Length: 356
Image (cartoon, rainbow, N blue to C red; front, side, top):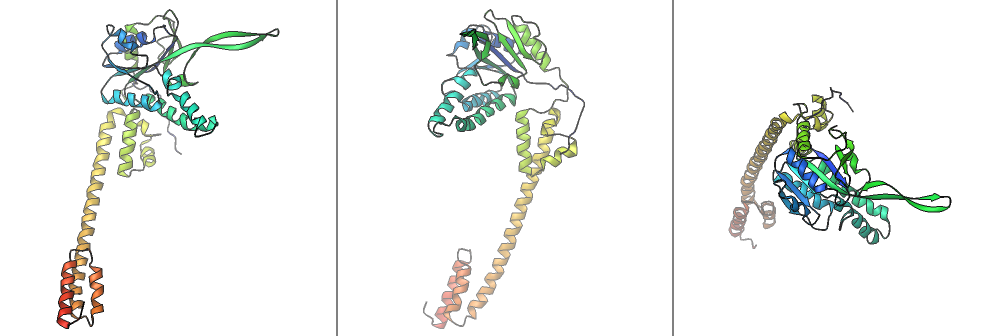
């Protein structure tokens, strides 16, 4: 496999941000403030009994109340719906439900373990994990900004102090699958007094703990748009381009090597429409060539059949007995010449006095 190295350039990006916190820490409020600063149309997918609508005076947004079961597929559908509706930012409030809510991943595993896999939880996870992964990929590949909230709870461990067992608090832990924070650009933990502490921050905008406001959303927008003008295509565009190339019969690996790409992800955003148009032109030419070839084959087939028909009429006239008529009658069965052949056979039989 050929690998190409290029000068590192940060591209324009879409937001992938987590706000985690305990009940009452202000997750929804903070998410809306940031979305307001970013600007554009805002959608909120609410699994918290429409709690987001309590902040309708804070910023204008459109709301969808999401009901159980909280399957990964349902969250994927929400993301696709927001993209298709042309929203700029989607707030998923909260994705804890996709993991531990009614009908979420943990319940799916329990149900599969007790039924299909008869107590084998490993087998159940082998089916649920790919579905959860598709949900993560839908967020990462989305063409719009994604802000998610997650519930946090106190994590404890049991210790042994001179023979006495004690429970110690070791900090807050988000209620989602372990390691999900690795998938996001920025992860903010909110304290009870609504102070944001960054546990991961590629934007480097939240180095100091503080209470967030609308201006932080403005800073996020500036950061998202401050990348190179040579931005690469996003996940949805990648899938569209891949599909078109497969339709056109283009060898994607050879296409990338010829252009010095490691993958189709390296196609520049500004050349996406032009590239798609070129591939669609190839698909159309292939379609026209196929139709022309099919038409040519049909014409040749019709000519052969017509020639065979003329020869068959001669053979019928020369038929020595009634059995010789079976072959042309069978050969032209179902064709446009069938009735003419049958009529010719009948006429020959009548003329010779053969009984059919």
